[in-house]
Length: 122
Image 1 (cartoon, rainbow, N blue to C red):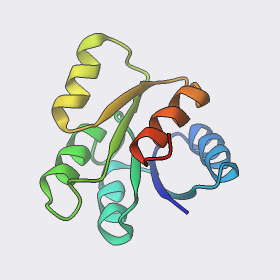
Image 2 (image 1 turned 45 degrees about the horizontal axis):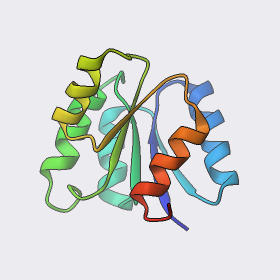
Image 3 (image 1 turned 120 degrees about the horizontal axis):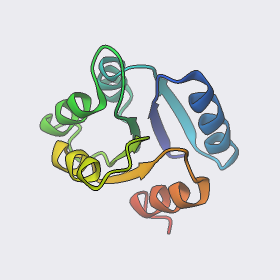
Image 4 (image 1 turned 180 degrees about the horizontal axis):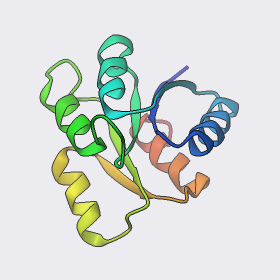
Protein backbone atom coordinates (compact mmCIF):
# COMPACT_ATOMS: atom_id res chain seq x y z
CA UNK A 1 0.00 0.00 0.00
CA UNK A 2 1.61 3.30 -1.08
CA UNK A 3 2.24 5.80 1.74
CA UNK A 4 1.24 9.41 1.16
CA UNK A 5 2.24 12.17 3.56
CA UNK A 6 -0.37 14.93 3.67
CA UNK A 7 1.10 18.14 5.10
CA UNK A 8 -1.93 20.37 5.71
CA UNK A 9 -2.77 22.72 8.58
CA UNK A 10 -6.48 23.15 7.75
CA UNK A 11 -8.34 20.43 9.65
CA UNK A 12 -11.31 20.28 7.29
CA UNK A 13 -9.10 19.98 4.17
CA UNK A 14 -6.88 17.42 5.92
CA UNK A 15 -9.77 15.22 7.06
CA UNK A 16 -11.60 15.32 3.73
CA UNK A 17 -8.55 14.55 1.61
CA UNK A 18 -7.14 11.87 3.93
CA UNK A 19 -10.49 10.03 3.98
CA UNK A 20 -10.73 10.12 0.19
CA UNK A 21 -7.17 8.85 -0.23
CA UNK A 22 -7.67 6.03 2.31
CA UNK A 23 -10.81 4.91 0.45
CA UNK A 24 -8.65 4.56 -2.66
CA UNK A 25 -6.20 2.29 -0.92
CA UNK A 26 -3.46 4.67 0.20
CA UNK A 27 -1.91 4.74 3.65
CA UNK A 28 -2.08 8.38 4.75
CA UNK A 29 0.39 10.00 7.13
CA UNK A 30 -0.47 13.44 8.53
CA UNK A 31 1.60 16.49 9.42
CA UNK A 32 0.09 19.84 10.40
CA UNK A 33 3.07 22.11 9.68
CA UNK A 34 6.22 22.11 7.57
CA UNK A 35 8.60 21.17 10.38
CA UNK A 36 6.44 18.18 11.27
CA UNK A 37 6.28 17.30 7.57
CA UNK A 38 10.09 17.14 7.43
CA UNK A 39 10.18 15.01 10.61
CA UNK A 40 7.58 12.54 9.32
CA UNK A 41 9.37 12.35 5.97
CA UNK A 42 12.62 11.44 7.72
CA UNK A 43 11.04 8.87 10.04
CA UNK A 44 8.43 7.25 7.77
CA UNK A 45 9.82 7.72 4.22
CA UNK A 46 6.52 8.22 2.38
CA UNK A 47 6.17 7.31 -1.30
CA UNK A 48 4.73 10.75 -2.12
CA UNK A 49 4.11 14.04 -0.31
CA UNK A 50 1.17 16.41 -0.72
CA UNK A 51 2.51 19.72 0.61
CA UNK A 52 0.35 22.70 1.47
CA UNK A 53 2.54 25.75 0.89
CA UNK A 54 0.98 28.12 3.47
CA UNK A 55 1.86 26.41 6.73
CA UNK A 56 2.70 27.50 10.28
CA UNK A 57 6.09 26.92 11.97
CA UNK A 58 7.87 26.18 8.66
CA UNK A 59 6.10 26.96 5.37
CA UNK A 60 5.79 24.48 2.52
CA UNK A 61 8.51 26.21 0.48
CA UNK A 62 11.11 25.75 3.25
CA UNK A 63 9.94 22.22 4.08
CA UNK A 64 10.21 21.22 0.42
CA UNK A 65 13.71 22.68 0.10
CA UNK A 66 14.72 20.83 3.28
CA UNK A 67 13.37 17.48 2.00
CA UNK A 68 14.85 17.93 -1.49
CA UNK A 69 18.35 18.81 -0.23
CA UNK A 70 18.56 15.68 1.93
CA UNK A 71 20.04 12.79 -0.11
CA UNK A 72 17.86 10.31 1.82
CA UNK A 73 14.58 12.01 0.85
CA UNK A 74 15.30 14.02 -2.31
CA UNK A 75 13.75 11.44 -4.65
CA UNK A 76 10.33 11.50 -2.92
CA UNK A 77 7.86 13.26 -5.25
CA UNK A 78 6.23 16.35 -3.77
CA UNK A 79 3.01 17.84 -5.12
CA UNK A 80 2.42 21.41 -3.93
CA UNK A 81 -1.15 22.17 -2.86
CA UNK A 82 -2.02 25.83 -2.70
CA UNK A 83 -4.88 28.26 -2.97
CA UNK A 84 -2.51 30.57 -4.84
CA UNK A 85 -3.27 30.00 -8.50
CA UNK A 86 -1.01 32.59 -10.13
CA UNK A 87 1.49 31.35 -12.70
CA UNK A 88 4.43 32.65 -10.66
CA UNK A 89 3.21 30.54 -7.69
CA UNK A 90 3.56 27.41 -9.83
CA UNK A 91 7.08 28.49 -10.81
CA UNK A 92 7.93 29.26 -7.18
CA UNK A 93 6.75 25.78 -6.09
CA UNK A 94 8.76 24.06 -8.83
CA UNK A 95 11.81 26.19 -8.01
CA UNK A 96 11.55 25.14 -4.34
CA UNK A 97 11.78 21.52 -5.49
CA UNK A 98 8.16 20.44 -5.89
CA UNK A 99 7.65 17.92 -8.67
CA UNK A 100 4.14 19.15 -9.50
CA UNK A 101 1.55 21.67 -8.39
CA UNK A 102 -2.19 21.60 -7.83
CA UNK A 103 -4.60 24.29 -6.75
CA UNK A 104 -7.22 24.39 -4.02
CA UNK A 105 -10.02 23.67 -3.84
CA UNK A 106 -8.78 20.19 -4.73
CA UNK A 107 -10.30 18.56 -7.79
CA UNK A 108 -9.89 14.96 -6.64
CA UNK A 109 -9.81 13.25 -10.04
CA UNK A 110 -7.08 15.59 -11.28
CA UNK A 111 -5.03 15.13 -8.11
CA UNK A 112 -5.44 11.32 -8.19
CA UNK A 113 -4.16 11.27 -11.77
CA UNK A 114 -1.06 13.18 -10.70
CA UNK A 115 -0.53 10.88 -7.70
CA UNK A 116 -0.90 7.76 -9.84
CA UNK A 117 1.55 9.15 -12.41
CA UNK A 118 4.22 9.67 -9.75
CA UNK A 119 3.58 6.29 -8.13
CA UNK A 120 3.73 4.49 -11.47
CA UNK A 121 0.13 3.34 -11.50
CA UNK A 122 -1.17 5.44 -14.39
